[in-house]
Amino acid sequence: MKTMSYADVAYKVLLEAQDTKMMHYKEITNRAYAEGLVESDDIIVAGNIASAINSDIRRLNSTEQVSRFVSYGKGLYGLSQNEPTGILKDIKEKNAHVKNQLLESLLHMPPFKFEELIGEVLRQLGFENIIVTQKSGDGGIDVMGELVVAGAIKNNICVQVKRWRNNVQRGSISELRGSLRPHQTGLFITTSDFSKSAVLEAKDPYKAPISLINGRELVEMLCDFGIGVVSRDVKVFDIDKNCDFTRLVSDEMKLEGDGTMEIFARYKGKIHYAAYVSPTKIIYEDVIYQSPSAAGTKVQNGLPVNGWKFWKYIDPNDGKIYPIDILRK
Image 1: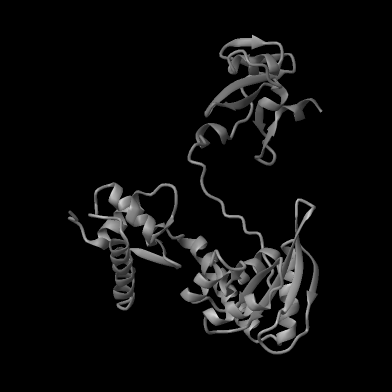
Image 2: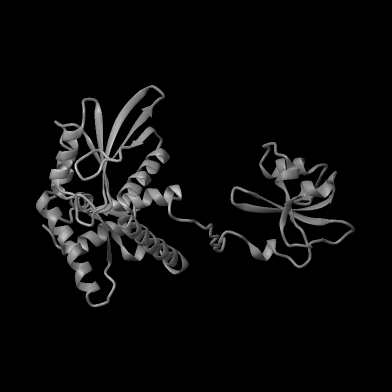
């Protein structure tokens, strides 16, 4: 029997999930049942878990508090504590805002320009022989193309596009299917989304297949292809917790003696230090080796290695790390 609230059950499952940061509520239910947290994994329990999560989100968000849960749409949920913070959060929010702006721009495009845009998206997806039909009004095929598989199999795709704010209903899917000829496949693209009945109609296994792309998916494609947006590369640095700064960063690079320099190498997560005296004299663990490769082979327990690439040093002029191969050039 259930001893936890459905919301607590969902939180526990999501918290313990190491393989994903988001999960469908049915999968949450399946895992909860496997752990003995709920009495069943049937549709009723799954619906109760989804309702509990949604209720938690609505209740806390209405009071300007942060819910434990995040909804990603289409029955997918995650934990707010796993959401990015700081600069990564700012980047995510910025991108989401730009995507909303891009979607709004699509809604204000002239109909034929929008159809041409869809043609370009299809080209980016690998379609060939694309034709924008230039037919006016609803109900007709707007774009046609061929998707070639393995260089031999050609799939004739007929596309209908809708710049709508309201969800596409079942009748529109049936209308597209009725326009198809034998051996043609339908693709419906909209700036909105599809009703549940429309999705079921498109997936009917006994009828000609219809693929669906909603507004969110279309915007993601435009961003991936760089259509309507520009991207900037951002470098985000973090501290390497495995780096021993007390040894690597030294004010004095040279050891006692003329021309002797401290060198180091990483092997199996450990840093090994040696002294570079000359190309034929490397001191490692108080033993003199006649080449960097010989000393490196000792570090690797007999495995041969190019010592000139294996050993590194820190240049006192710029503080950067270089392979000792530079020392002999």
